[in-house]
Length: 454
Image (cartoon, rainbow, N blue to C red; front, side, top):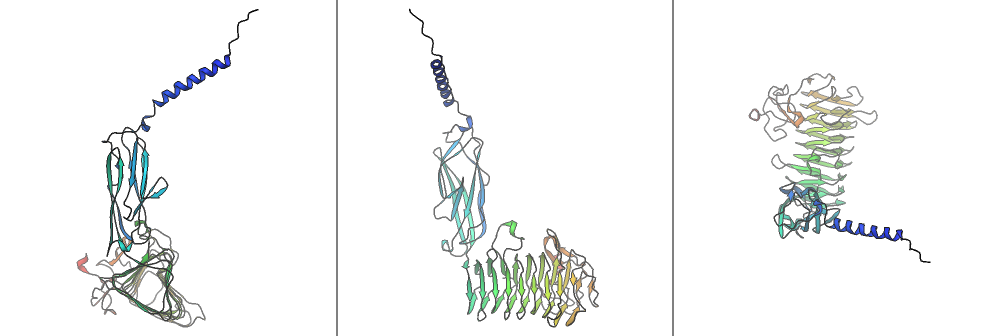
């Protein structure tokens, strides 16, 4: 008996599914999203977030802060960039999609999308004498055309020192630059002389340890600078970038026209050390501008400002003389708990001599002076000062605003109507912080008022 075969529904369903996938795949292959379709048009172009990348005042032989560049594709389709490159010997390198190098190939940017390129510069002393300059371009090759973005960097040539110990007489010549990677120590038998216009950069937490002699003689026209290594604008007032100058017992230091910036404590003076300091600027320190635990300190014509603790901290057992200084401690972007000038006397640490003449001590706090005037062993001379304090010592001006020109802008010169102008009968010093002649009568503080500066 003949029977009709039953249809194989499983086989039919599999065939239909295969046909459906085939036609769907063919359809997808011809209907890609518009943003993924690659343009071959030579007139297509990229757009950049910057007209040029410029690195200002870098340090040679050091990886410096990077710059960001956004590359935009505003075209109606994707662009395949055949090559992105910079010169092999230019000193520049790129970071593209997680890879660092100088040549990148087959980089695609979809329609309406962007590409982040991080540009780095690391220049070397041997590239060019004097100030090191570097010129180059980021070159984009695609669709038989080329686009360039200019790169420019200039750097200070530096001599890098790491773990250096000076055991002899050594001189750093005028205009030279040094980078201290960890510490520089002047041994008891060593003597370092620093000429004017020298710049010394300190890497993170580096320090200058003085056990012998340090002589740094700048001038008003060629000041010596000691500062942290970070060059970005955001770090120009950030403290704590290095440890500071530490004077140990037996150290003999003479500093003139030196800027000491952005350390933990600008200068630390131990018992048995001697420091003669004039025309200094100590600014933006985590703790103190100067901290002395004894020793001999002569400080004149100096500005101390923006210290997160006391501008000057003195302890018993020292011989301290402060003449014509401005200690200005304001709290514009931090909170401070110590007065601008503090003298801490501990019984049993020996006699202390403190001379305060013609100093301007002011700040945001109601009490910017802490003196233990009744302590045993204190010999105190305080006259002709202007300070913000309730400590009453005859011959001084109390709680009268000195009228700085612009304290929030760190301009601590005096306005003509300042109560500190013209009140010192005869100057103890011939010039001020900037080297300007002092008049007679002269002014309290580090700055001589100059009418033509109004």
